Length: 133
View 1 (cartoon, rainbow, N blue to C red):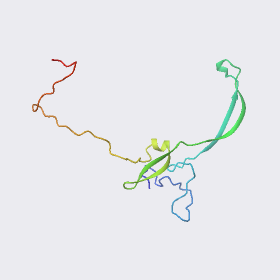
View 2 (cartoon, helix red, strand yellow):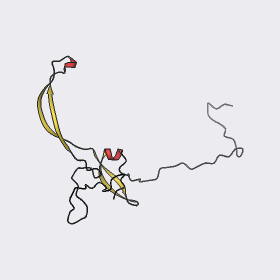
View 3 (cartoon, one colour):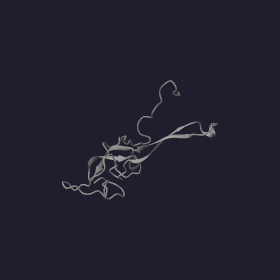
View 4 (cartoon, rainbow, N blue to C red):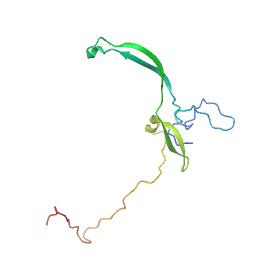
């Protein structure tokens, strides 16, 4: 199970029937594995003419055709359980919303801490062409 906030099914659609060979629920192809978002249908409207606010006589519809609106899906490595990871197909809204925990490949680089002590050691003397004497 992926570490998800607010989603007990970890991206598996609750209405999908169980398959015989496995206990995993089936998901629709090319859909988000977290929220189940898939494509939706709409129209492409073709116009001709110049808009009235631009000084024309108005636009006319010359054709309407069907089209698909596809979700922006990204293949993302996600942490699952304790230290294990898997690759999921996740929409960008789930990534932005923090519904998945991305895999941390390497710990961030940190500078070693330097203790500052006053009065001990030589003073730092500036050097270079702009150094004051």
